[in-house]
Length: 88
Image (cartoon, rainbow, N blue to C red; front, top):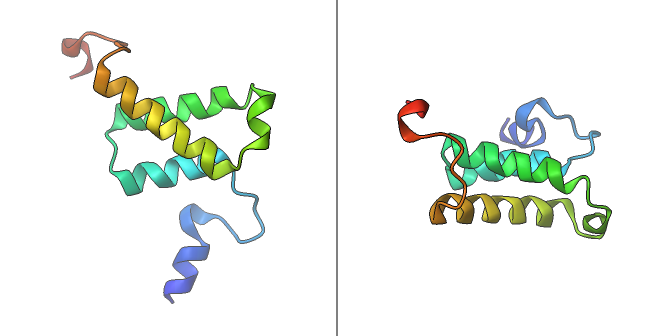
């Protein structure tokens, strides 16, 4: 049934609390981000857990902010982790 697919996204049952990291993974799939952008967004999301001020925002807002920051970081080239020849 289609409704079971929605409820069991990534083997989540309906009684599990969905975290901001779950939202980041979902938004990465929807936005079709490349691997580096997706990993960077997940990294930002994990860093956001260290900031208690972000606890007032919804999990979806934190995830969307992490996706936006990762995409802007990659687009502007402000973050260079490795030289291009090392990645491929």
